[in-house]
Length: 551
Image 1 (cartoon, rainbow, N blue to C red):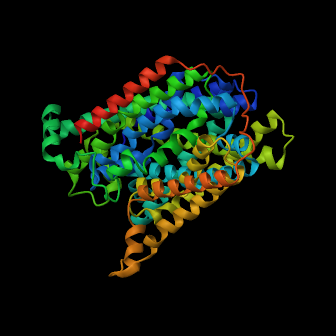
Image 2: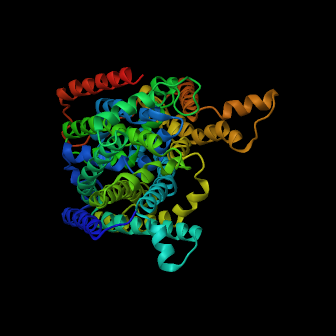
Image 3: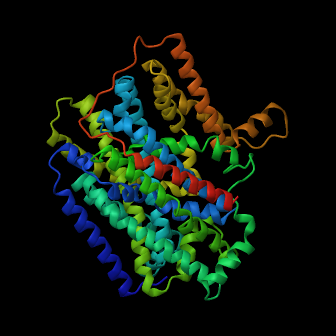
């Protein structure tokens, strides 16, 4: 897709606007609390927009739309719609506990509940996962989308005389480093305050761009009529428009969605994941934090309409032309976007990538600075030194992630979105079990919590890895092992979580703590807003109606 000077001007204006606003906001930070938690002064609109902007990236536009294009169809939207319900539960039950403790990071909470070793284990897991999974995958998928939509490999071929494969690889590397440098620059400078103000702009561009693509896709299907396009969409592809799939479905089984494994990554991601919770920890009060979370939940209900449904539209229009499902969304953009809107969509894609990348960067640097450097390397560190270390590590993480991201090219089989979700399975069941176990059993010991953290990755590897390396046997015990290891990873996550909770429960029964832990109390206003419970109930009801309609 050729770019005009208008497209370039729109994109440049967007980047300059984001940099200008974020750098101006970042100048106000004078302490580590300002840098890492925006001075605990975030209001609900900033929190809500920032949660969505941090979450939605090209892993969704590339990976989730690709799953919708393929056999999964609308069922992949359960990751979004059930996330809305999870956010409600986080606002009701998790956030009050975290804000009242006055913590900077989620690993810090584990130290208060268990001990410093539990904090270090979780910090190590999260930091490594952010850099080599989250950040690198966001860079990779963002570069793939930008290259596909805007023809950067073709530009490299024409400019440097490369063959197709060379041009594709070097264009990938170029786009990865471009995204990393732009996002890393203002994240390192201004911390969370810069990130959330940039997210406000980028989330707006993301939602606007997604709506435009959905509209143009329907209009193309209807040969000029959106209503005709919607009619064709709902009648021609009714087989793809069901969110409830069989219990043994390898991707989104209904058992996992409603009562099983999907709750484990959801609770981890939205309630215990520093990458997301850092915004809510920066709230000026519990009421503002809860409202921001519910605002994000409301937006979350709309995401399938701008990401998942366009993937199905791409199947209708271009199924015979698309060989890789992950390229469905960007391929469709190249076909349906008029020249006047290409710059807008480039801005939306760039915003999706950059907002998620800089959020992960800020969280990784926060965990290193607060949970590792200040705890183990230099306990007497000052607030100013923490800010400097945070900025340095942000740049270090940019270099590591940009260097690793091209390697994902060799590990992309099965789709980017599924790859990301499955890899998180190594750490999420253990972390959720440690947190939930500590809440369910007030006398659960540090040894019980650390056992859950350590055994989580081990159990997941035992469950999943045989299916990665075995060929399907003809029968016998080997066939049973293969069938078990290749069933939906969401089932494995639930089985592991239940097993770890049993371990924590048994260890607590055998050797409980003498008395429950007394958590610290912050000076933050933690008075709950009664309207949050009414609004949350409304979101749950809306979600139930959506499932009934698309069942």
